[in-house]
Image 1 (cartoon, rainbow, N blue to C red):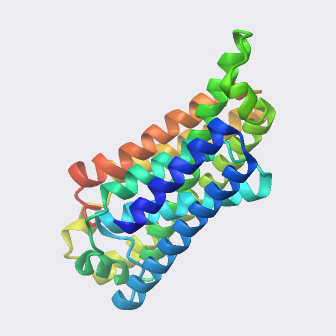
Image 2 (image 1 turned 30 degrees about the vertical axis):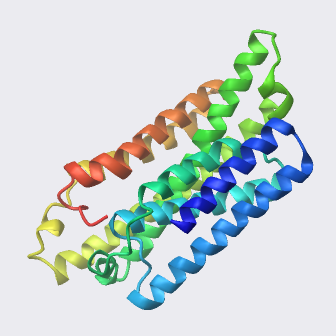
Amino acid sequence: MTLALLYVAAAAAYAYAFASRRDLAGRVASAVLIAAALVHTFRIGMATVELGVPPLAGREGAIGGFVLMLAVTYLYVELSTAERAIGTFVTPLLAGLQLLVAGDAPSTASAAVLGEGRFLAFHVGALLAAYASFALAFVISLTYVLLFRELKTRTPGVFFSRLPPLQVLDRMNLRAVAAGWCLLTVGLVAGALWLADAQTSMPDDPRVAAMTALDPKILVAVSCWLLYSGQMAARRWANLSARRTAWLSALGFALVLLNFLPVAYFFSRSHNFV
């Protein structure tokens, strides 16, 4: 619960900094989020030592790992661009997800799954990092749309005076999508390599037998890869507008959330351990 409260405090600090536009408040908000990320890293590190593998399986492991990777990804963007306004929209997502698993503990049984093969931990870690990048792209896209609407109606308001220019938001979105696409590609390849091993070493495992192109989680993951591939290709070669790029990022993240939560827990027979 302490970790969740740190993320809640970070969300409150960013909201105050956004409203007050005080530089000191922004620095405090960044410091609180950095503290939350450090505590989270320490917690995962201690669990890794105890379990022998990174605790990225199970509900607490998967959501907790996603939260940490999103926090680190956002902090990298903030520190490299000196733009804190996006944190106002990112930190509530971090706080909400961490509160969702605040009472859970790392599962020894589910975490042990990550030791079943050379590529599985790499597969899970890469996908969680990809989902974090896509989540950041979604938040950036949301702020782009909000600012665009203010400018279109010629009534500059709260977002105009606090958010980066549209061109900056567009570049940030494209970079986040590109990073997520690369990580998703790596994760899918690692998953395919693990499956090839598992079909030999665990041929009787029903989860392995269910891992086909028709499995809902695999199907949605591949659909995400195709959607983001199409988005980047259309932007590069078909002059897709920045606004439509933002909407595609939002659609892509909707697929990511669909795959990350309901599909994984209720529909997939092959990935019910994450």
